[in-house]
Length: 204
Image 1: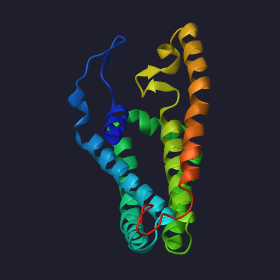
Image 2 (image 1 turned 135 degrees about the vertical axis):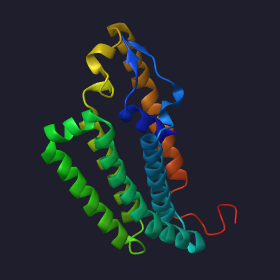
Image 3 (image 1 turned 45 degrees about the vertical axis):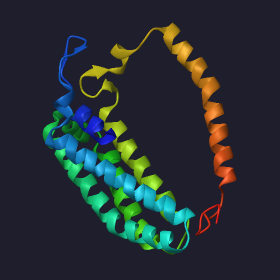
Image 4 (image 1 turned 60 degrees about the vertical axis):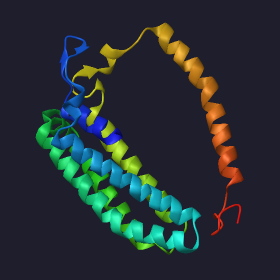
């Protein structure tokens, strides 16, 4: 669903005036579907990297096989998505023309990280997972550079979508309270389950 939503936004949202006038089924077109499959493949690689870090025995072997098989698929789908995005959305092509150097650097780094990831499988516990996180960070950075400064890509700029100052202050205060709590209990959970997961599970 995240991939469908991202693909639908990049493909273009129909807005009449300031109101959405499209359909929820606009996301069920070829480009959003390709984007959805690419995002799904990325999450499979991310899961494989996490299991590679945490698991032992048979599960670790499964993670290694998964990474070796799905990483090239993810890279190929990412390339296909970039090419398709430029063909279906003129705004993406214009962004590439406006920022060629940083976007090309992101692409080169993505390929380099992917190549190192393939060679690190089975050799390091944490490196594959770290590299997959870097792949996602590069993908997000490239997407942000393409759609900035739009709230709805290529349709509604951030300045026009801004809420009132009072609403923003309310959200800021809420985030300032909630974010440390979320980070705190997440850190506690990771601390409790730190290290390798026993091959027979925690109750084994």
